[in-house]
Image (tube, rainbow, N blue to C red; front, side, top):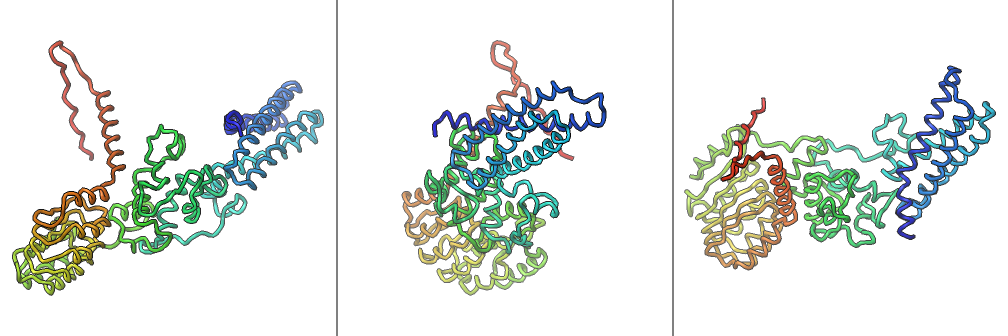
Length: 481
């Protein structure tokens, strides 16, 4: 199909509203004229309006036929929409011929309006998906509008949410499926099911599990909004930062096709986003009073310090460094009742071994962990892979080597690591940084900062006295009530 034909075809959404508006105005005017004879259309005016409707319907049908030839739409839906469009055109021609016979004219006008409405409904399904109009319609109307099909039960807790159907697919449905779904599949790419996503499209793999930067689905989202290959195109609803966070997390976690969301040990940021999107409560947190009582008892028994990190939340930090060699794997096991509330754990200088790190791996909420000056090895460090929330890790003065870093590549939040006096080389650390840093996200943040700095410069008032510009002081911040 030539570029010019494509160019003309894409005028269909613009010109199709012309005959729709004309026929609707004609119907209203005829109804008013039937009730009040003084407002009745003259034969000449009626003919002008009808000819205008015929011209508009002809243009819409022609452009629509060219647009349908582009091959990115569902053939059955396109054929139905095309047939109904030409039927509407035919009925407008008939109206011109029979306008002198009011009895037949009124009946044909009513039929034309009905067929036109059905045509428009099918056009909307082509653009937005088959269930678009019915999505929020009253239940009694949904069967008439092509909706009402049974769907998945709504999860009542995050633990019940399916990682793909409840978390990922809704994001794709809201941002992508209008152009990459059942009724329309631009670039031969569909994103309305996991199987379709895996199949990819004419431009390559949409999804590379474990590799967000290599997945075309995200690469197109990362492009600047004004880039011709950015998706969704300008004018379409754009994904929010939280949408992108969810998709990045899913692909980084090997893009599972099914299974429980919480069973994937998602990052806390992702948990909060999904809870908000689904309107579900966050997972229950430990009871602060109970944790503090238990912490006080363990302090006395183990000779360590356990302190709350805030004045309101149950989160705790435990420091076993004071106990020294007396704190071993058995003592660590006695800390496990506090595991749900532990965010910080200092095991530096203790007798904890690789066997004890298996217990540390079960402390899913840990954010900061110190293992300096202990007997841990590469084997033990591999047991920390479940700590998806870990931000800081101290390995100073241990015997770990470059091989240990392999286990750390699966810790998405890790941003700080201490490796002084270890067997870890700078080259291995740089490779780890490459794995863990989200370069595209950092680039996006830098672009946002640059754009905001330009906006600030545009809004800043300056006065030039010849020597140096006078910059007025910033307005004081207004405290929110």
